[in-house]
Length: 192
Ligand code: 5GP
Image (cartoon, rainbow, N blue to C red; front, side):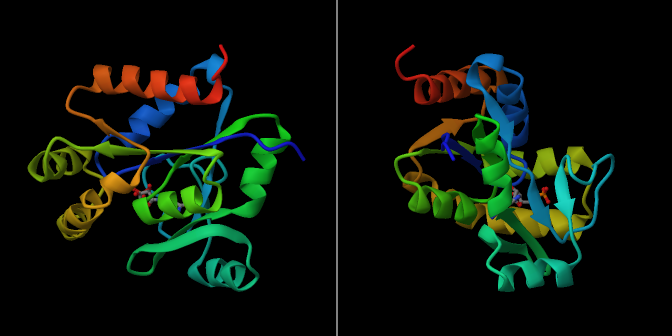
């Protein structure tokens, strides 16, 4: 099977990485396909099974861990498992496309370590922890407890930024989108 490239976007929750990833997916010249992760967390809002995530029970998730079906997985928040199935990357490569991931920092770095040459690992940095909290509150998708949990985790995640190939500062969204496009385009179309 021919292997494409792997583009990892990692960041604390609320940094805007999902917006950047969605923007890149709309650019036909980049030939990207989204890696749909598996998760055991509850479905949120308008999310669709098999499009946003493969929603599994914790029991199903753990059974797949035991069967070594994941490229990487994490218990990102307590009892909430997230992971990339090996079959997902194979599916996208079989389409002749490059894979783009929206995953947490540990998972992102694990993919970089497994495929060092094929992977571009990008860290999206929010302007500040306070701003991150404001963005999560505006999103109105999580309880205060869950927001506090995400903010606490964000500080530790920010410390891992230097381990990535590149850091994008998301203080102006338009600038971050342009920067992300240029980076990914240079990586997937190096001779263009
Ligand atoms: P959310 O619950 O907001 O959809 O995602 C929570 C966190 O889990 C985000 O940082 C997201 O990037 C991360 N995540 C989503 N999918 C995966 C995955 O397959 N592996 C890992 N390690 N993290 C993931």
